[in-house]
Amino acid sequence: MNFLDLLSYTFFQNALLGSLFASIACGIIGSYIVIRRLVFVSGGITHASLGGIGMGFYFGWNPIFSAMIFSILSAFGIEWLSSRQGVREDSAIGSFWSLGMAIGIIFIYLKPGFAPNLSDYLFGNILTITHSDITYLAVLSFILILVFALFGKQILFSAFDSDFAKTRNLPVNTIKYLMMMAIAITIVLSIRLVGIVLLMSILTVPQMTANLFTSNFNKMILLSILIGFFGCLVGLFLSAALDVPSGVFIIFTQIIVFLISRYTIQFRRRGKSQKVIA
View 1 (cartoon, rainbow, N blue to C red):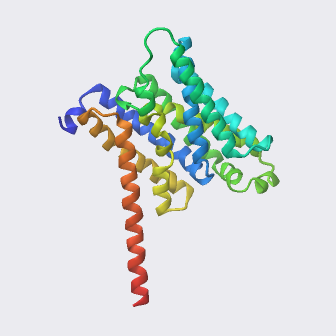
View 2 (view 1 turned 120 degrees about the vertical axis):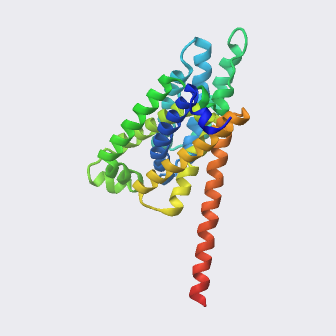
View 3 (view 1 turned 90 degrees about the vertical axis):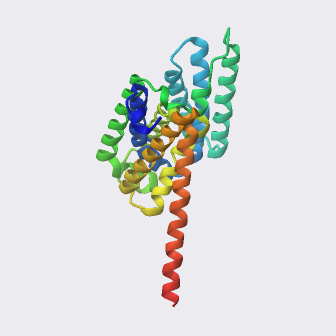
């Protein structure tokens, strides 16, 4: 089956749209995560979401909705403990990371009957994405674009220098909590893309690659979106061809792009330095 044949299938068309909107959302939020050095915070929120998924299966709720609520509360909890209660950030992350996974496993095993299949949530399979998932991702992408277009400078001021932002009368704490909520929502709505196990990578690897070429925040966002979507395209095709969860190939492709970019830049710098010496 070639790529053109795949495009004729509705499930693959849905996957392409989902990939596009997920790349936009993850490109924007992931860039914020990288510049604020919140990589492990995003990892903690991602794994804590399993608690909401387990509760959703047990009580008969929508697992994505319950995971979103649980993730937002976890994000707020991490921010509150680390900023207001004097708890080290890594300790707060580890606590919610472990708590969420423990709660999720407990409720999954307590559910009567057969245990639910968690493969799509753990490893991702965007080929199963639905129209409602695409709609949620599209709305999230639009909101993030609008927010960063209108309030990008205020968000960056709060991220880089909170003391200076406070002198400008910016609501720094409110901005931080809203961004933590945006991180949690983006994480949960992107779970079908690469799964809980690999989700932290899609929020950081394209952004790290983009950061190799530019330090401008807006350019970094645009480039990370393109890299993320390219990884999704390759991952989707390989996933459909080999019947392997899409998340594995998406992350693998993005890491390969990062390594090639890094070593290409290093090679060029060495060549220039040798010319200067000569």
